[in-house]
Amino acid sequence: MLDDFVSLIYPNVCSGCSRPLLKHENTICLHCKTKLPFTHFHDDPYNMIEKIFWGRVPVEAASCLAYFYKRGLIQNMMHQLKYKDRTQVGVDLGKIAGYQLANSKRFSGVDVVIPIPMHPKKRKKRGYNQCTYIAQGIAEPLNAKVNEVALTKTDDTASQTKKSKFNRWLNVKSVFNLERPQDIEGKRVLLIDDVVTTGATLEAAGKTLLQAKNVELNIFTIAHARK
Figure (cartoon, rainbow, N blue to C red):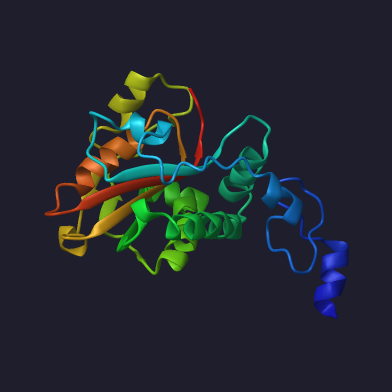
C-alpha cells in the first residue's frame, strides 16, 4: 500500500516518453519498446558498424541495437541513464540487446563482456559508469561474465561530442591500459559502449584488449549516432 501511495505522488515514468509506467513495466513502456528504432545488424557482416572498424582494428563481429536520433527515444533514454541516475535503464536496454545477440550466430559463445571504462575522477563525479549497467543487462541472456577490471582508463580525456573524427582519435589513442590480460586470454570478448559515432574510443580500447593472447574481439553499442 505504501508503494502504491508513493507511486501516486511520485509516479515512475517511461525513460523514453515520460508517461507514467504501468505496474508490469519497468523503465520503458510497452509502446516505446515497440517503437525503438532497431538496426537488425547483428547477423550482417557488412553492416555500417562493422565497416567503421575495417582496417582499424580486427573484430570478429560488431553491431548496435538502435539508431540514435536527436530528440528521439534512444536519446531520451540515454539522457536518463547518464544524467538522471536511472541506471536500471541501462540494464533494461542491455537485456533487450542481450536477447537479440543470444539469437545471433555471429555473437554466440561470448565469454566476457567488458564495458568501456571511465577515468576514476569522472566516475567519482557521476557516481557510476553507465556502460557497466548496459554490460550487466547484455551479459545475462548470453550467460557471460562482466569484467570491469581487465581494462582501465588512465587519462581523463575531454568530451568527444564536438570533436572531429581525427581529433577524437587523437583524444583517446593512448588512454587505455590492460591491467589483467590473464582475465581475457583465449576468451571471446564483447566490448560495450553506449553510443558509437566515429568509433575512436572503441578502436583504442579494442587494440588495448588485443594485447592479450588469443583474444577474439567483438564490439557492441546500444546506439549509433551518425556524424
